[in-house]
Each structure stands twice: as structure tokens, then as C-alpha cells.
Image 1 (cartoon, one colour):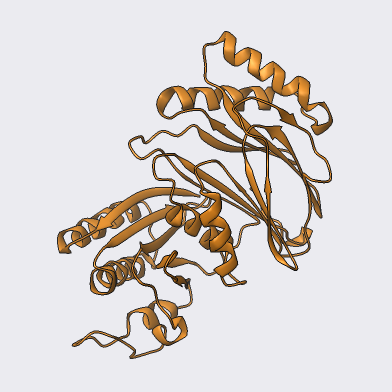
Image 2: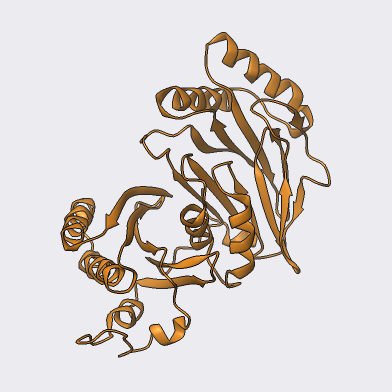
Length: 332
């Protein structure tokens, strides 16, 4: 999942620009739902000005090239989301109150809303996604605030996922990640032999004058996810008591951790494992997960982690693995 546009909405001119941007994105898609997405964008961006004074519109594209829309703000939040979704409900004069109701009552797209009203965590995210979008692996990335190139990548090789967070930002960080990606594809990997694998990567990076990196490999089986790697990657796993935070070792290409009981996650059907780089604020993430509705989608969790994280001057990457039955698994 890629964020292809982030547009600040602070005045009417921004709404016009957002509409034009979305139409340009949709030009390559001859789809009957395109006009509906433009309608959604106009409603969402107008609501940002009406109810939050300002906010952002993000345009996202999934691996199947389908478009998702989200509106995000840091206003006081919505206390009664069910009421806000009903037909005719509004807090504004001269408004019919049909926007969110019309958006949610269609056959193609689903509207999901998460809102926080606490003093230390407040704001709203509205997500418009295809109704059949429910991947077992959801990844989302925001580059460094002044760069369009990130050193964070996620790749898959058989049953292994590799999350790379190269030090710094920009072209050199990107080159480092691409080098690690190439090495991972070309060489055999086993969580049992992680020391040799990561030590060899470290040597190659130094020899080629590239940067250090934080690496995490996830080995995914039908019911168990095991992790090994090097550096500071944060994990949250969900069980019956809620989300459990597991912190890994600090440092860039420092101590290597191999899979153990601490780094193994037994997931029942529809339980999630969340993996985040250091751009995601752990404290905010913990508070957010405790207040999120239990039925929140993986994409919504990722959006909340991105938007509400107080770490501004860093790139951010988050990966969420939702355990599915084998018959429900999709190609990544």
C-alpha cells in the first residue's frame, strides 16, 4: 500500500487542487466508481473545513492498483460515530446532512471511521476503501518529511518477510535498502543462521560505503510468526487481553536477535501482529491501540499509527499481518 498524495486542506483552493489531483490519478482507470470517489473527496475535504478548520486528504493505492481515500484531522473528534453516519444528521446550518450516509450506502466502497476525543489523543480519520479489500498483510510507508525517497522497504521471499529501515533518508538510504534487498533475494536465509547472514550484510555495506540499517525478518507459517533481526523494531501482538508490546534491541546493525519464545507470536484467526520502525511513537501507539475499536481494519490501524505518531521528523513504516485461514490467504 502506497500513499501517492498527501494534500493539506486549509481553504477552498486546497479542495479544488485535491479534486484535480484525484482526477489525474483516476485518469488511467476506466471505472464507473471514479465519479463516486470524486464525490467522496469533495465531501471529506469540505467536512475538514466545516468541522475541523483544517486537515489532510491522503490518496492511497493498493497492490491491485485500486484507489483508497482518507481524511485526517486533529480536531476534538466525534463522540457518536453511529449518529454521524445516519441520514440527515448534521451540526451545520443549511446542510442536508447526507454526505457520510450517501458515502457509506453504496455497493462498491466501505466507509470506516475512527475518532478519538481524549485530551491527549484527539482527532478523526475517515477511510473509504473497496468493500472487498481485506489483505492478510498490510504495509504502509511515509517518507521523511522533506524527502520523497525512503530507506524503508518490505519484501517477501517464500515464507519470509524482510523489513529494512536504512539509516537516514534520501537517495543513499534508498540505495542501501536496495542493496540489502538484492542480497536477500540472492542468498539463502534461515532464522537459525541469522548471525552469519546479517554479519555478511554488515561487511558488504561497509565495503561499498553504504549506511547501516535496522533489519527484521518474519517467518510466517499457518499459525506461528517468528522474528529475527538486528536493531530497533517494535512489535505488538494481539491476544485475548489486548495488544502486547514487545520491544527489540536498540541500534543500527548492532546486536542480533534470533527467534525465541519472546520473538514468536502465536496468532489465532483474525488476530494481528503489528511491526513498526522507529518512526512510530511507541507511547502514542500503545494509547491508540487501547482505544481503537476491536473491529478496526489493518489499514485503519496503520493510518492511525502514521497520523497520530508524535515523531514528526522521521520516515515511518508499519506492517500489519492479519492471521487468516489458508483458504483466505491472498497473494502478497
